[in-house]
Length: 387
Image (tube, rainbow, N blue to C red; front, top):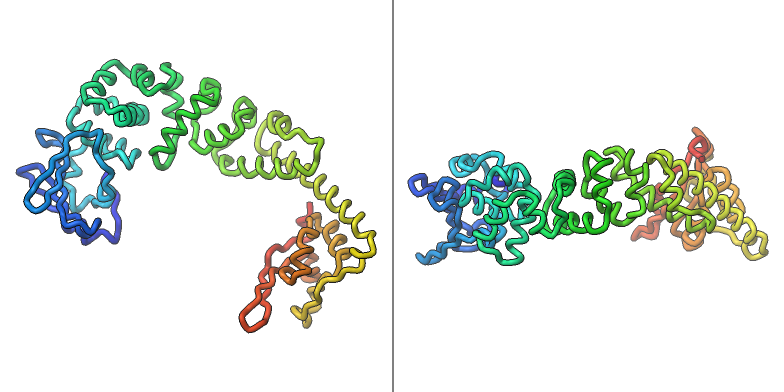
């Protein structure tokens, strides 16, 4: 909750003063917020628990309601050394639990310090404890209303949060993880229960990372696929890219049912195999189309700007017309024809590399202020890398 240290906050943390006789931490806000006032935080062991006050020109405004606690950026900026006595009073498990919910951690710390009987529930079920805290904030509950729901147990908490009140829900929420909790995470949980078969997902997955939930909300037809059941953690980030590429290449081949291919794939390797096969078919279709276009007199007579770049090298040969570019595309199994508009406008140049190994090189031509061209290698395709 407050163990984070920020290197440029040394002046700020030096303005913290701990008063053990009052169990209070005073923080001058000038260095952080350009605010001449002083923030006073009572500690975990204070008789009233954690509260906050603002001192301004000898006037003090006290705040004891945890559901109206603001987000103070200083909460993460306090380093352990300058506030050790204050931090050490907070049980470590509570500190770690509240750390997950940055925007609400002050309110949660206030609530728990003022009602220490809740600490076991918070440590055991931090996420849905936090969801109930948000529900109390939104609906303007009193502290008594909140405690009444907590005393009824975990299923009552789920019901109060408008989630399915069963043990599977508890397990699913425990499996959903994210680096930063907040509005996004709350919405993700509610959308998952509204749009996905969470009972099935809970049964087949040992964890449910938030980006996997986002992916399934976009492609809900895949939630029962073997692909999701067998997906490895190392493949989470690659899956959306493969699906995106597969859909893009499938638009060029009208007869392909992408949803069926994804549903029938046992794992990501099988899906990638489908993608490579379709990519090859789409490339062949595109190049055959260009081949037909080149039969016209206009296309066959069009030539590219000839450049003096690399003129003194015998290992690079510039391609100067579409027929040669098409032949090179067939050779390297890449769609180089897409560069034709850029080549004609002087934005790109394509070369055959003859030594030390056969390859194709596409250069972006950066126009410098003195009128010269600086070639920047955009892609380099070796013959042995051709699909």
